View 1 (cartoon, rainbow over the protein chains, first blue to last red):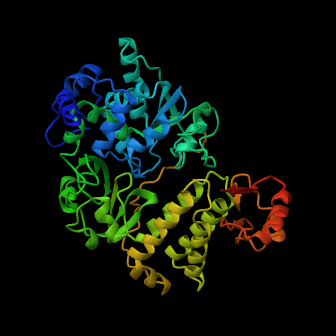
View 2 (view 1 turned 135 degrees about the vertical axis):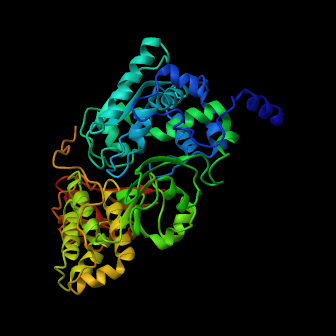
View 3 (view 1 turned 90 degrees about the vertical axis):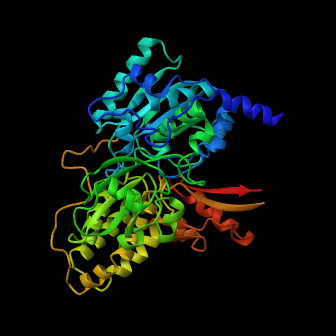
Length: 437
Length: 67
């Protein structure tokens, strides 16, 4: 009986592309795929009832691509357990200055994301489907707005789609912050529980799902879980988007298969431009990993765990050996302190204090207490915020102290091995978005 | 049934009265904000914990019960 059902449902899937690209199939650098081009590339979007969608996602083993790698099926089940009508939010507010993969996907293939959003919204009988896009990413905003117009004039979906511009703040893409913004508040994290799946927009059960995850959902629904698992590893199936920058010849967004060799991925980004000492992996919530530890290692969270890292939202930044890793770390710590939403005392004061000491370490103004203070305060702020900003910032800092341990010792002696001071890690410029609405 | 303290870090303004009234369960960090022990409170401390909860001027501290 079960077997027969499996055969029937397998037959219903259309054939998907072999190998890569999947998400970026047909994508050009200059303009988004139109609705017609999108249909030609990916085929029609099936309609799935909630149980069928949960089953297919569970079989596919799809995990969230926003950084936390939470199983997509589990999240969907949690929202479906609440009372209808429900709300779905496509989270395109990547927040991370070193990440451009959500922007690239939205700007290149907005309909694939909207497909996933509509699919989830229909299955959940959502009253409204919202797509949240960072205001500071105009290419993505324009492409999504145009795509919504195309679909609406077609009478395509039967689901009301709404775009919500999100302030370009680091924590604005956090689930509870998005819900707060959509509800007319500031894009600042709120205390959880209640979590959005339980009580989100207007108190309704709300699915907040990263835009890349939704695009995967749109493909899994078309081509099935077996197709999905043809790339990636058993634990991390399906392709994934990476944003590679720093000292590589062709920085940009790549679609890769988790488990692919690090060296192959860097080659695909054109190779390194100069000697590289370490990589920042996973963004400013992520970790510094020495290049030697990454060489010939498979790029997957399971493998990166062995060297204290995780793939997160897929950020890789190549840090030249000629630039001071501690100075770069201090710049980012200063930025993260400024990105505190100003709500939790331990974050406001803790991150400021930690950033100031990191700056002193980077600039060799090292009183005896600098490292002691950093240790003490790092331990003090973890787990105490409404969101994970302090935890992420501290993880980033401790990984810097491990990866650049030799440089820390030099700095304590008043020296520095760097020969250049040009900034490598991307940060928003002077014209940055300071607003919360 | 056990009782635990729960802090809303957004409401909290760092008045620090909780740490004064219930130092066994609340310490202050270097900036004067409470670090709350969220493990179950021993029976003989519950009365003190309640005083700390009632004294908070912004209602940031709560006593919650687990089954």
